[in-house]
Length: 234
Image (cartoon, rainbow, N blue to C red):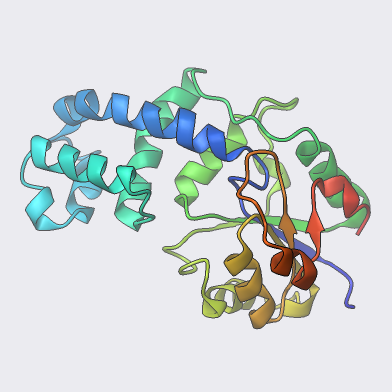
């Protein structure tokens, strides 16, 4: 097996609990939405977010808000929704209301890989790149801002859907100095792990508290870890 030179990380269910997104970030966005629409509706700052929505939902504050609530109730991972969510979360992160609760093994292991192994750590999440940077810039750890430890960020806009082989090929192609076989993708999602493997990456399933139960078939076909510490030095 090739040595690992890049670790590519999913976020929810991998580096932080799924409950942080579902029980903290999503409600925060919904609560902030009406006031933000009222204050920013005609502002140049908000214009790109509004323009990204389908025309039938971007004509009024009420229509856009209803569409957002509908999409979020179905947990649909649509790029224009993810961009708006990141915009809504920014205030909460900046004022200290929101801090990402990383699993205890995450920050120490990222530092270890980076400092001792020279391994690059990158992020691939369905959340927008700006939202990813907010999360890693405002964690509950010390230091709170671990953005300097991360080398690149990918989402469904700049890479593609996470369950498609081509997305992982596209990510690796951006960093051609690292052959795709020297990448390790970590995720709680079995289909994402399978897609990464099909592309040629190494990939493990991360089984964290609160994640969906894994099938026996998944446990047989893939390496499953409960902590990044199980990977050790790279």
